[in-house]
Image (tube, rainbow, N blue to C red; front, side, top):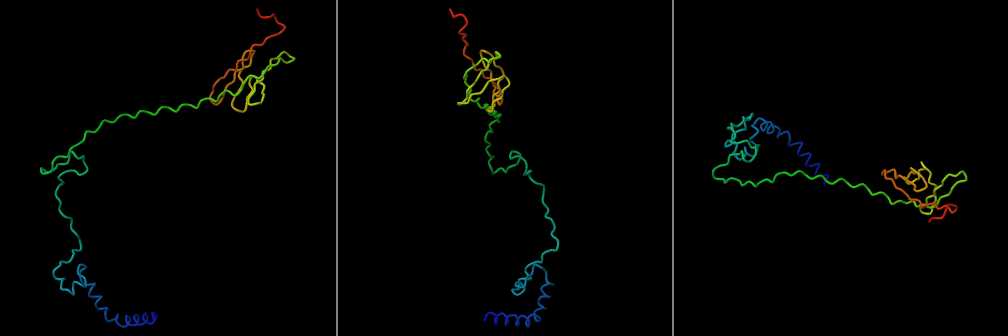
Length: 182
């Protein structure tokens, strides 16, 4: 049914179209401002056709610069002056305090013991969480500590990431063969 209706409308348009070509030619010769509906209503004579080139309107000088500050604009006498709120002076922003460096970790090493080697060399041992390590000058432990000095009274360690020195005092060595303390 729809196909039949479409075929009939198409045939009618083909037969009627050559008869309306002369109207198309007449519309193109009229000025652009006049439409076919206005011609039919008789309004074509009341309107002027649009000019082919628009001429710029003659404007006088501006009363004030619209891009200047509001105080420079001239206001009419009828309008009251706009109140201006006092602007507080700009204060220099106080710089944020520098972040504090992270505190060093607590000293994980404790004195464990010492021995005298057969060659007479002092051997000092430190303990950390159940592990025993020998403290020798220049020894590096895996957690960032380096042994900087070992003597009979102390072991000095340096925490390398923060360059902080720690000293572990050694208990005094009592030689039982030496003279008794008085």
